[in-house]
Length: 383
Ligand SMILES: [Fe+2]
Image (cartoon, rainbow, N blue to C red; front, side, top):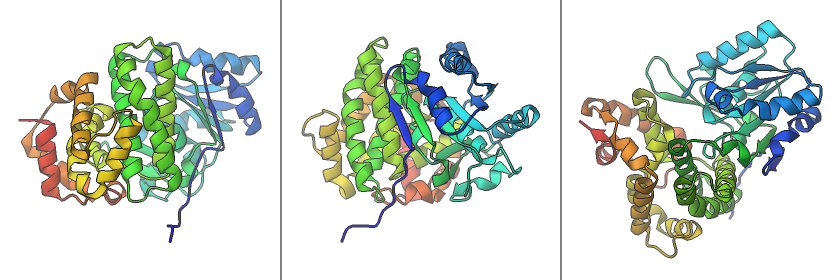
């Protein structure tokens, strides 16, 4: 008997060069007249804000901008944005223009802008319940897929660990995936975001909770990313590769929104906040070792996924080695080894990873604290 399942998708997804100019039309369809644009200093410095504000001005919209989202944002970031919106008054929709950090702040702001709810109390699964305002996302990196997901990740300022807020009401109303917004992404960020997208597709495909939609979309994501990731890292100006990465990363987001990420992400989250290692450097660097552990439970899936990446017919263990080679080739392996991690921190991080049931339970193989410590020892620069 087939499993019961449920899928969540944005109501509108526009993809293609130039679709960011459709923002006024999309906001109009949602009844938004005074949007708040949520973004960060990197997006402003890259000159991307004008790509959306110029069409808004031309269409006669009044808008405000919150441009102080921090990387790996703390909950306080949402509170700052909410305070600004309260002072301005009249905000009736949220637009997220940026990478994962920006989009995560935007989706939670849209949920809590009214009613004074404590953001920390929403951590976990299904605790948000309702979203106050419509939200539209324009990703400026090809990696996170957050424009399609019900997930927002924050850093707990007290512990340095990462905390997820997950609720189906957080799936954005619309996503405008314009590859042109990713053209000026620097090489290091392109590689880290891109390999993270590959891991999203992979974990969505092998997760025990994967829906049929997620498995199909994950393979299509892999078809785009497998070809384009090494190419865009070698040739950052290759616009076809940028297009394929933007599409692949978006589809990978759709895939894990309707499945789950698994152990690679469970292991990455405790490390990133504590040692300020970019998320994709961690997921890309940890993936091969975790997949070797997963082989006994999902060997056939790994072979299928490798073929979708364009790697031909490779045995599952060889697939893990190829992942390692890719991580080295695009630079995330060396980037991970540049950050020393004290041995004394491994046990606490491993406990935190194993306690993350949301990500660990869907993993094809159960991992113990001892397993995770040894995976950290294999992959991190432990001293
Ligand atoms: Fe990720």
